[in-house]
Length: 422
Ligand code: ATP
Image (cartoon, rainbow, N blue to C red; front, top):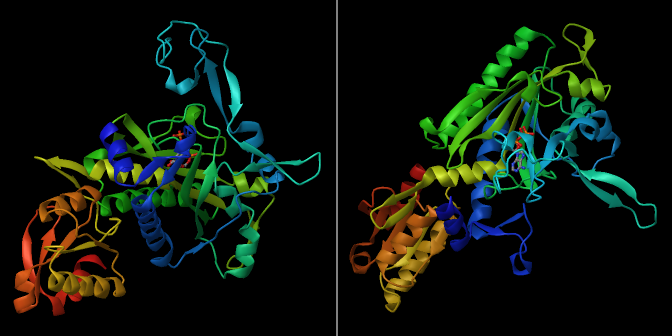
């Protein structure tokens, strides 16, 4: 984990938030490469969950909603974790993070306070005059979908079964933020709420379907099979809204950890918001059930980084799937002080950028160091313009994972990369 955190900071993926003021626990900033990786994860998710389907539409709801939403949804009453405080070192822990009866920090035995319920919702205060109105930063993005259910049914020509997809920020007062970005207080979720007819047969069918679909998405983007597993929640582990719940877990350096939750929410949310659906096909009004897939963008980013990290002799390589790689092609003139090489390389660099490839220009240091730098940030291809280029208009293309080099003619370069990257 230290290696990942150090690479993430050194190369501009992730920085501690407001670091020059000492940082703030549980908050992180994404740097120039981090934002590219994050955008690529979201793009791939949206492509698979919305664009490639006929039964899902998207939405982007506000972060702050009428506080009644959170009362109706049950979050004000039940969105809480039991908190224990160690009387010796005064550190606080979530009940499920304490193994046996000793403090995970100072190892004092049997010295905890009675458990307190600790609500995870983050309060904010709105308005300019006192008393200000209390509201909440959303603790999950899900409720924004439910409160818009009627709007979407009335405006988007959808019929059951159908889904509503959303990506956006959520906030939780986590008792123990940690494991780098794994548990943060501000994070992004990517979720699908899939509305179905209210019966167990349908629910089981769609639960299985979405579980497979989500597992396949992670596998298709290169997560190693042996690092993924599905775990069903015990009854007492489920959130207040769930009739059944499965976690897709990743084998992180800190143990098997939740990547994404697949939940059978039944009619919990729509009935709490008093919303129903008129099924024109059978001329019946009912409260649909919901199967939810709820993943974290930040957790996905962290696990994609961990899974892609690899060391080969003195080389560190981030073997990211090319569709996720922040930079797709790096372009180098062999020597920075040879005008003809530099101007030819600049032209190729600008042509590739104009063809919508995310490119990186580098003319510093020697060519070997430039390759190593690109390996470390996961760039799948490097293009070097050398003296042979000036003679026969070909360039060297180097593959990240194998370090294999091939000559490609400049006129065929765009198609070469289109085939491999788009
Ligand atoms: P955990 O048990 O790890 O606290 P959870 O079961 O409370 O997670 P959900 O409420 O199901 O999580 O949220 C759905 C997804 O949102 C999670 O699978 C995770 O990817 C992401 N997520 C939840 N809480 C956090 C957090 N504090 N930091 C980063 N991502 C989070």
